[in-house]
Amino acid sequence: MNPSMPRLGAAAVPQHRAPGAAGVLHLGLGNFHRAHQAVYTAAAMAADGGDWGIVGVASRSRGVVDAMREQDLLYSVAEISPSGTALTVPGVHTDAFVAAEQPERVVSTIAQPGIRVVTLTVTENGYSYSPATGHLDVADPQIAADLRGEGPLTTIGQLARGLQRRAALGGEPVTILSCDNLSENGAHTRRLVTEFLQELPDRSGADALEYLERSVAFPSSMVDRIVPATTDRLRDDVAHRLGFWDAAPVPAEPFTMWAIEDRFAAGRPAWEAGGAIFTDEVGRYEQLKVRLLNGTHSLIAYLGALRGAETISGAIAMPEIERAARAILRREYEPSVEVPAGVDVRDYEEQLFGRWANSALGHRTAQVGTDGSVKLRQRIPEPATQAFERGEQPHLIALAVAAYLCCVAPRPGFDPGPHAASMVDPARARFAAIAQTARDGAECARRAIADLHLFGLELAERSDFIARVGELIDTIVHHGVSAAIDDAVAASDAAAAQQREVLR
Image 1 (cartoon, rainbow, N blue to C red):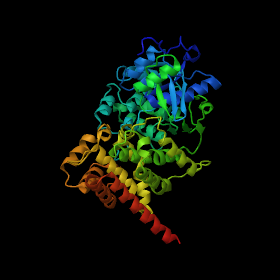
Image 2 (cartoon, helix red, strand yellow):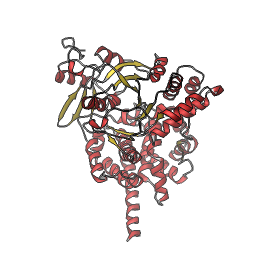
Image 3 (tube, rainbow, N blue to C red):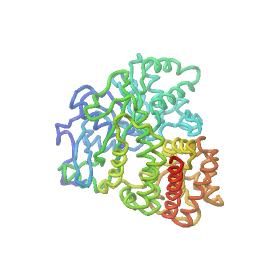
Image 4 (cartoon, one colour):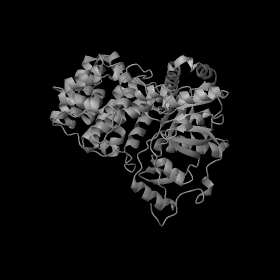
């Protein structure tokens, strides 16, 4: 902290003092929530008022909680683009705490009648489900502990126990709103919470199940904003611009989008004041985001990391990576998407390339590539399966998988570079053990995709896809990333030319 500078807080900027009453509990007090839902809520309250302050709950880390509490729960959002930086202070949080330290407080807060919406940004990895079945992973030690009455420490356990307590205290209606990159995230969350309550012994979850059916809504939503990690350089820049020291600023791109099903059990903030879209086509917005943006983003991150690019903008500036990104987006992801009404997909795609090229943002390839074993399950199986149904081999999707495996589970003697090495992944140890003992890329791909169900069951029996991934792993290892890109793009070009001939 700069000792000569006053700390950001309500006394310093009283116009941003947080409201007195909370109507929202948010699980996942990371940068994304603070630059997305909190900003929309600030706009909603400025336009329409209401008791919609947010109680923010961090999962395990004290850093952001401590910083916000020392700053009267205020922080700044820095919208960064090559043309400059704009600062805002969304003063909407009324409290903040750490779930791992106060699990009972999570349950009791969900049960409070004044809490009418519970929102979640806990990442795809935070839902405790089996990738093979899509159902609650009751073998997970933390889920098992939550079912025994310990904690709860899992998101699903917290929601289920909170709803159980709320039902016992009178059962006021409430809405659970997932804001994570999961297909049909509302229905997905509802299913997992229901399965948790069904697993409780002696029908102790029966009352909560009846209450859930009667008074709990689970709308789906799609969220979109690129939000990198906070750096010391950003803190110094914000202090210079703001005139106050902010220990917890959030960097974000100017672009933001939120599409939501308007199914709320007990009212909601006027998020449309911040630009939120209320629509019956959330599923189509999810496809647009998860496949065109996230799927292509993953390819850029893994190829970029292997080519030594620290940032996404550095990666997309490499002509061969841009060529691969355009090919996967147009030929393999776009055919799997039903575009929402009123969206021009060509404009959307060009906007994506502009966002990825935002060199001022500093979005790291390692951050985008982290948790790939969870993220890729949402981005790859369905588009790949649809390609096979059209009689096509998804060469660029195979390249994305090969690059991912080379990043997190490099073959002996292959150095993926520091950016790949710093990617965090829950499956890294299992895949690394495979890579060390597999004879070649084909065996590495087979054991990851078919034996360990990297993509669930959808692609486990696609021997042609697995073989293609294996070929590209070997190309990356023995001939380099550029050679693998040339191979995949050339194969995709040839297939596209053949298709055009068929259609003549």
